[in-house]
Image (cartoon, rainbow over all chains, first blue to last red; front, top):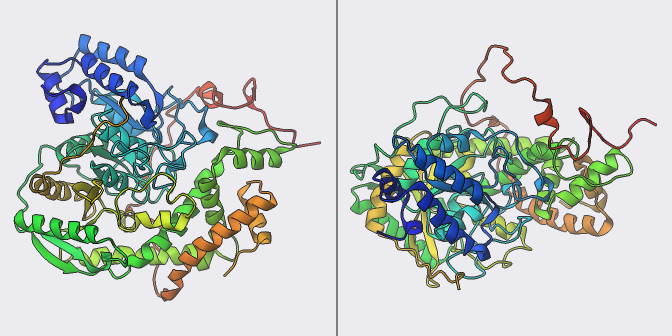
Amino acid sequence: MTDIPKQTLSELINNIKTKKISSEEATKAFIDRSEKSRKLNAYITDSFDRAIKKAKQFDQNPNFDLKLPGIPIAVKDLFCTKDIKTTAGSKILNNFIPTYESTVTQNIWNEGAILLGKLNCDEFAMGSSNETSYFGNVQSPIDENLVPGGSSGGSASALAANLTPVTIGTDTGGSIRQPASFTGTVGLKPTYGSCSRYGIVAFASSLDQAGPMSQNVKDCAILNEVISSYDEKDSTSVDFKRGKYSVELSKNIKGKKIGIPKEYRVDGMPKEIEELWQKGINFAKDCGAEIIDISLPHTTYALPTYYIVAPAEASSNLARYDGVKYGFRSKGDNLIDMYEKTRSEGFGSEVQRRIMIGTYVLSSGYYDAYYLKAQKVRNLIKNDFDEAYKKVDAILTPSTPSSAFKIGEKKDDPVSMYLNDIFTVPVNLAGLPGISIPAGHDKKGYPLGLQIIGKAFDEQNILNIAYSMEEKINFKNKIADWWIK
Amino acid sequence: MTIDLKTIKHIAKLSRISVDDEKAKKLAGDLNSIFDFIEKLNELKTDQIKPLTSIAETSLKLRNDEIKSQNMREEIIKNSPEKNEDYFVVPKVIE
């Protein structure tokens, strides 16, 4: 039997169901490896003692009909977990202990999973490298001083380093797919409205979506099946018939039409990304798919649109952090002074920058020129996809314009950092599902990912395409456990 | 377009974030480079385009007006940085 932490979710479930291993053994194995991996800084808060207790409880009275029977799982620290500190990577929530549970995490516990701990992330999920977290940088298991991507950087690092069998992240502009791509793992952003936003610390409400991250496509389907649910506590949750994604998973994609958008061939794209994309096209053909050239003419406007819409919504969502009802409070001479000092000391610089952008584009005299304009362009971007989907079933692109970069390399240049999300942001703006799968390495040996974008609520189709391509790609992550002495 | 220091301080006031001169200068530089990038949208004519306000094409559902949670007083106040019995405490507002 493979070392427990190196087992896939499917293997673990099988081994627990057939009583080859107990939940306690599995839980202790992941805890042990997590303890040896402190150097990665993947966790903000661990819940190890409680996890062992829960695992013992499971073993005493096991229910093997559950989808995640006694499986230990660590989650991004953006999901509120009852009685367990939830920080969103921010000083302002450093002492926040939720009195309620997010719907997505509740769904996981209802299926028998056990919380290992809360994983590091960019502050309020604002970042592409996990460098904006108040709790410090996260190391990528791929190489020392390499970013794991962001904002779900702790999730990607913990997953790739085998500290958790699967994990969940959130994706507002690429925060699941980009770190998955950087760490050689699989990450799915479901259709907007498919996973409940209840209990997830809000960043940009019209874009935020939770999703699974895993070692392979099958595990991704299993986890998506658990987390996706209609929830009356989220007013934008959509009540559609959700598939049994893992049961219906199929490698038969014969005759599927896959679009290749010419606008994604951006200036200055490294040759290895271009080659990876071509390789992906060939694999899709080998799987029996038909390749069709398409155009998404407004692609180049997606990032500027995003950097109006997302900060505008963030500035409004983050108005709640005032030092009164919960979270960090600074001392002030009067109420306003207390607010201003609390927010100035409690938020990090990227968050303050985005609140300022958002406040500006929503302020009197600028609303029409920026915010309304961006909402109009967002419509054009969505229309591009609607038009394309008259001709194709899915779209294939690279996940990111480059492989992972070193810690500190892009930190002082916000615009260059934002360009990381050039291929993922349009998908959030259009509310579509997108999955990143590992597809190769660059010449430094760092992973590169391909993204498959689907029609709204067509997760099954992109999972199937990913599943069949995964077999042809046969990707092997190169991780040498450099952080364990 | 350039955002000057006076505007930065005005936005900071609206954002309830305290900024000193040095921080305002840094923010002005950052915001100007970000807005240079955003200005690209002006290339597009959008007079006839409708704004997209919600991506989920559903109308809000109505529900019965029933009380589902009660006696949450302790839970609500639990995380407060400063409280007095059942009240949130803030710096004195009325002289």
